[in-house]
Amino acid sequence: MDITSVGRRSWVLMGVGLAGLMLAACGGTEAPPEVKVGTAVASASVAQTSATAAASKTTAATGANQMCAAFAQAADPYLLRAVDKQRGLPADYRPADLQTIDDRWAVSGFPGQIMRGQAAGAIVEMVSAAQAQGVTIRIRSSFRSYAEQQRTFQFWIDRLGEAQARRESAPPGHSEHQLGTTADVISANSGTGWELVEQFGALPEGKWVAAHAHEFGFAISYPPDGESVTGYVYEPWHVRYVGKPCAAEWKSSGLVLVRFLERLATTPAR
Image 1 (cartoon, rainbow, N blue to C red):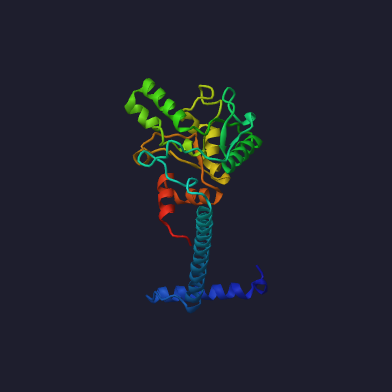
Image 2 (image 1 turned 135 degrees about the horizontal axis):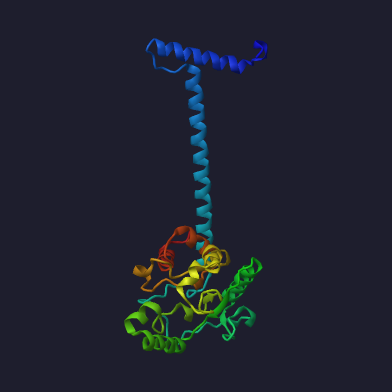
């Protein structure tokens, strides 16, 4: 290489390298001033970038929390109410704004599905979005009254015995389905037709629901390894509408839904 073609930066770096060698030969370990300054600037830059990224995440999380809190304040008490084995609903509770969902989004043989207005619109938005992406899911069950849940629960007791039935079905008054915001969605690829089976969670359709349900305002109430909290086995098909702001916050929280709803109920408005 022609020495005149070597730039100033190359000479500086060569000088720094020689200085380092001389120091090493003399037993010195102190880096030249240029190296120290450059390292300090680089370290400061990395620290600033990390701090900026962390601040952005915190700001985004705070914004989501504020949106959920505002949504929770505006919603009626039943929309985000915790319903589980200990906390139930009145036997005569029936939402006033139930709407019938177009049968084309329901499993064949299970027509007339009904949900509360916001939830009905959101579930149609979800299953139609899935359809547009080549994922076919349909609604198998939605609102169930206290009396209907009573019959459902007894059916499972007769079929499974009471102990197992209590792991797989809610007693009357303790089902999220009575809220009118919950639906069971399933695909025909479960291996047993449109039956509600755990294998759904491992299918492309089940994975799509797990990944995208929150985008439409839904949360999965009974996750894998959640039985110690919920008292119910894993149900990858069971989704409950909590509104888009709170579904986004729930998803990022990593909490089982009932724990998230408990925290939400005790968190003051921001």
